[in-house]
Length: 356
Image 1 (cartoon, one colour):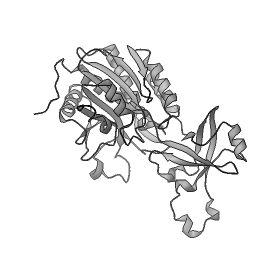
Image 2: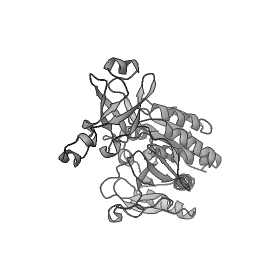
Image 3: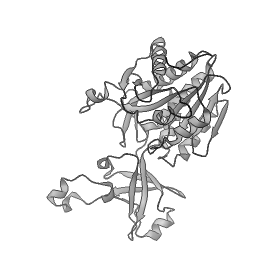
Image 4: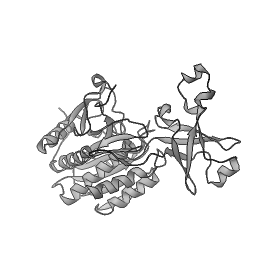
């Protein structure tokens, strides 16, 4: 697993917030080039890698590679940078963080500042820190100094929270959601390169802009171009093995407990059934999750493309989602890749997902 983790670490270390995914995309495509039959990208920024591309049924494996981040909105007369959020942030976790601003000449380090508690009035101390009341300090003293660093309005930034190995098989990173999805679909393709499916072809896709993809993001455009017969999406979901998380609301999912299989909304019931069969055949543990309205993943952008794509969702339990230190189990990543590969191998040439 060490070489595989080396790839995962490289993938997680590279900053790539929504709309600015180029750097992790290059790492993903370089890795895919070592075993895929064809690797390519598109104008949207999605990355593709194929095994048995000409076979049918064609399976799309999708995991988004973007992460939440920040974007510079204003540089004031003292050289402080104001910013907005790319994706959904709990602004409380941003206070005091170190950041990497992605400038034209490379990353520039900075810190997020706010008024010290000593200078706050009692009522101010009780208020939540809003993003618009925070700023990035690069150490510069003027807009000209900021410009000399290669930084301008519109540049993205990420929290400077790198890859961290914890006890056992747990890892932490700011980019778990959902760089691990892009990792899992490529690892599934690697397994299929070693032991190909007898009938089905497979295309792994590292999609873009899921965190801001209110119209379907890169998942929709890539599904439109691929015309898959079936799609499997890999994302993260809430791990409920920590304090103060309601199992009544999101189900019971724990790190190391295997992938989570979703039912409802965008998920096709026949795809779900086949995922369960593949998991049980391979003795892969799993848990179930209900999605009564929407999955809030790339599945929502795929399942209604063209005349419809039968779609399944495989999720990785994740602690502390949308924070600088998300935590997952690498065993769950490995099992998810095995499940995807097993699903593809079990497809017959005449596999049908027509209901009724």
